[in-house]
Length: 299
Image (cartoon, rainbow, N blue to C red; front, side, top):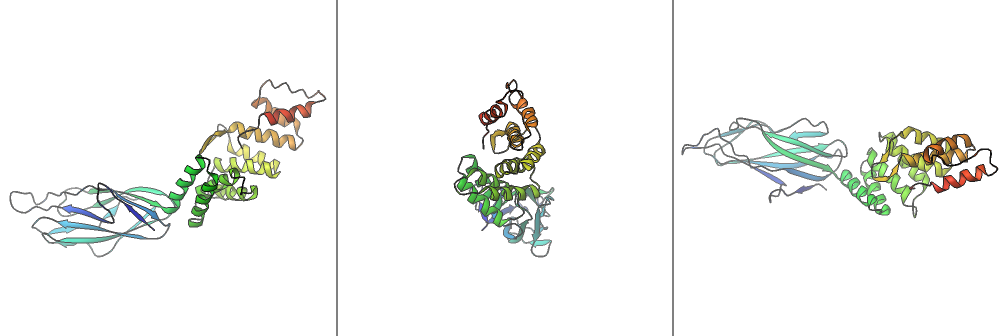
């Protein structure tokens, strides 16, 4: 359900604009006084319209012509106005304008409603902020994730994916939470979520998670390809302890498990210069395994 936030102590479920057209007493009939508010609407559902009311009051004694409000061209907002325009508002009268917002994707969107009337010399902007429920749940999920509440984060992200199956960031969060929440998640579920995120346009963060999942699932060649696709430098957006060095570790371990010791050593020489590995040593493979284990990363 959509919610409307209070701003400057005024409940904006019905947003009031006070328009003074002027009448007698030396007042300029072209002056306009528009009370300044920001319209904040949350909890919107993707693709579902939400109606709110703008009430325009003509506090003057002369007729006022009000034109249809407009938004300033955010491509994610579908905006419509009910009724015919322009509308003539008599002195002391009011007119309720029903406006309909609809967001085409999960997002926080800031835009501006423009009000024009015969009393206004210029366009009058009214800031608006709209958020979808799925966006809000993802923000909650990342907050929980960053606080190491992976079970709670998983629940928030899963709810967001149910609301918007095309929301890549929700699948990214779900996949990483499934990687971290070892008490209830599975690697195959994490890989599926992260793969969906990557398909939906999420880049390095999804591939980094896929590299971790594929390594632990035994898909060593794929894990190497995922790590290479991330590139360097890299730091995970929601955990700065996960960096490109963790991806190098994945490559080293994957090459080792594939039996490609030369490639593993080449990566280890970057991770741990001067590591002392000697391919002629009878303990070369054991030494390499011990070194890899000592360099184990964050996940």
